[in-house]
Length: 149
Image 1 (tube, one colour):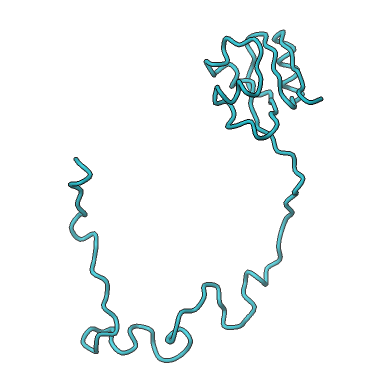
Image 2 (cartoon, rainbow, N blue to C red):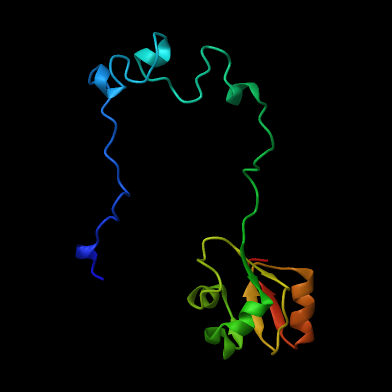
């Protein structure tokens, strides 16, 4: 199969109805819009309710978005075992996590969470650590170094 030989299957595309082409077409004169009124004359904006206060304005706003929320790049301990690029390193920095595709980029501070087990002693440099991650790193004989503290 080649892209330049692709064809639509028969019956998949129908010709559009030709509106306003006389009484023989069943869609002549008013062209399926009915008699008079706003919808017969022109387009109506989506959500317009005839001058009544629209639903989106009647309903209250809910929730709150905190503009000062701290955002982190999250990495779990199990990722440090899974990634071959991190397997032989004795010291892991955020740049190493980016190059090993454990986190997307280095735009936000890095937080290490404790999901999974750490199988070797390693020094991890990050901005934050969860309590369980700290315990597991210490249990494996490693060290957790907080950046910017």
